[in-house]
Length: 279
Image 1 (spheres, rainbow, N blue to C red):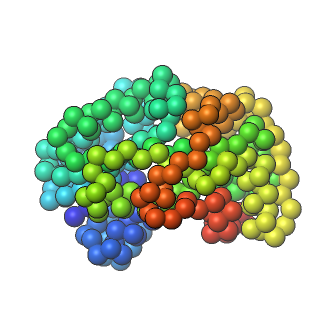
Image 2 (spheres, rainbow, N blue to C red):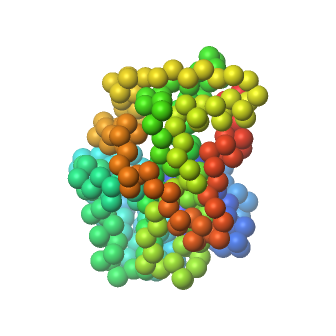
C-alpha cells in the first residue's frame, strides 16, 4: 500500500490516479474529505499532528511526503513525519522538496527543507528527493482576474524561469514510488523552456481564444497578495527567485526526460488542459 499526502492538490491528484491505474493499493491523505479515484481509500489527517497519520501508515510500504504550508511555519517539526514512517515499517519515502535548497540554501524555508532532506537520508529508509522549480499551476492565482477582467496581474513581467507542469512532478513521483532504480535519486524538475509571466498570459489567451491583458504588479503588491495563502518568508523567497533568478534557476534540467523517457510538458499544454479555470 502507498500513502499519498497532499492527495487533493495539483500533484497529489494525478499521482493518486497514476498509482491506482498502475494497480497499486493507495491511501489518499488530505486535511479535509475529498473525492478520490475508484478503489482509493481516503483518510482525513492533519500533518501538523504527526500522530494523526500513524494509523494510516500501518501496513504501508511507501509514502509520498508533501508538506502543507503549516509545516513550513516557524516551530513546525516535519521530521516527526519521517520518524512516524520509520516506526510504522514504511520502506520508502519520496519527498517533495524544492530547487531552492540548492540555489538559495540560506532562506528560512530552504534551511528547514534541507534539514528534512538530511533527516530522510539518515533515517535508514529508502528515499528519493524531488526538487522542482516554479509550478505552472501557480498561474491559477490569476484565474479569477482572467475570468472577470481578462487580465493577468503579476510582478516581473519579462523575467522568466522554466516552470514545470505539476502533472510531470506527479509522474516522476510515481516512478520513484514504484521503481527500485530511483532509490537514492535526487531529481531537479523543470519545464522545457524559460517562460515569462507575460508569455504565460499569452498562452492563456491562446487557450481561451480571446485577448488577455497583462498588468505588472510591484513586488510589494505581489507580496501582499501571496501572503494571504503562504508564510511571508516563503513569499519573499519566491519573489526573490521570480525577480532575479540566478543561472542555476534558469537551467532547464534533463531529469524529467531521464526518469520518464520524454520531455517535460510546456506551459501552453498546461494552459490548454486547465483552460476551464480561466473561462
